[in-house]
Length: 582
Image 1 (cartoon, rainbow, N blue to C red):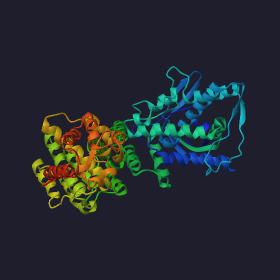
Image 2: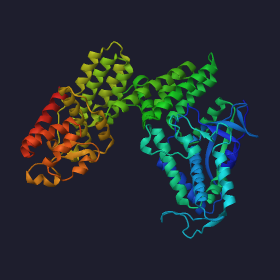
Image 3: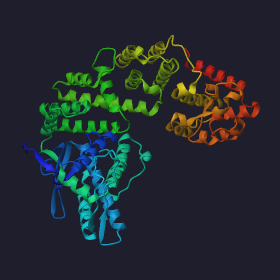
Image 4: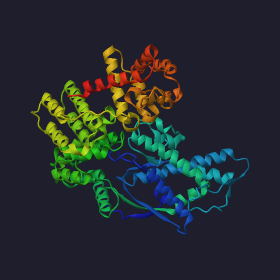
């Protein structure tokens, strides 16, 4: 091990002759608009104040011995980022946005002298409104653009990028640095990809509103300062991370746990240390690959992992206690550090599956989610697991969707049963089913008279399940494509009043009752608007939804009045009683 003292560097100095990589065992890009906005505000204040510099962050980098690459005549150190990746990633995106702005100015220039406009900020900004633009020659602009482009993408055969992110399966980040490619945020399939695309758009907007890209580039390169702590020993890197954490820096509990587990393996050489380290890298790479798919599942995996196996009590653990419980189990045993890490991967996989397969509002209650995760983790045969999850789903919706029960009143029952299912291997699937059904015993079903205002999410779920029922009863295929579009819309945009709200008084009924409400694909309800039901029937038939077809046939045969609304309401309530009753 060699101990390199920390360096106080500008951004330009930090990026000089270095290539950065975020290892797979680190979390994916997770900054949101708030964190990016805070950074933008820091940069704006730096320009408007008398300060000549601003400390941004500490960056901890692992530079393994002899890990360098030659590009033309220069040698570059390859640095693994252990801490500071979120801020560094965002700054690199800003630099790319500046490069795009410079290229645009150069393309649009009509003369050899180019006017750089002053910034455009909101009135509430601290920026001066009387800033004047400055000029730059075409030659100077070309030089600045070339230097910035070569900083971001190296001029070698592989076109190495300045920063290589992790878990970038869609290649959004590298494609943005190389070609400026920026898909729509809606194209992203994972949470991490969505945040990366949002970051790119927000950074482009920030650069555009700044006005003078040369001024901004100068400020970023020379007035933003970092403490760079470099080491060639991974154990030392994790020790540095821990020291920084003990000094009060904001670090997630999950990151603290991972760092502590890494330290156990580094410190206790029990058997093949290098093999153990490689195992942890691979395990945590898999963990963070899953974490980037859905918001919040990292925290959920941490607290569920501790609650289900390593803690007692009748509540889901918080993050602090979860880390303490898991590390208490590990202590100084490297094999247990790997075992706990593998357990976390199993749990986060189960949590992700739950979020992917189960619709709101079923997964809105944390201790209900814990129970489902325990069923998945138990490893029942596929058919038995499917039946248990269906029983669980009916029970959860009966209690918290139809019963309108306070979620806090059942925490202990759900947590206790979740632990029992996972840890009592003698408990058969039929016994588990009985225990799940017992949870809903005595819970009365309540249907709101005003489903549109008070029960939107629950209504959408009920009608979705009713569509499945109609498909199964008629031997037809359930239309997943149309329903996936409906779930992506807000409830307000997808709920259709068969008899328009403006005409409810004409038949003397509540237009918000379940009998008068229907779900349609996106924008269909706004297209139909205040049309009379008889003028909507043909459009309902074209949706390819059985639930809409059922209503259309009724309209064509009997019209749509108070009697038909009451009949449909009774039919739906009867089905709900049969489906979710005891």
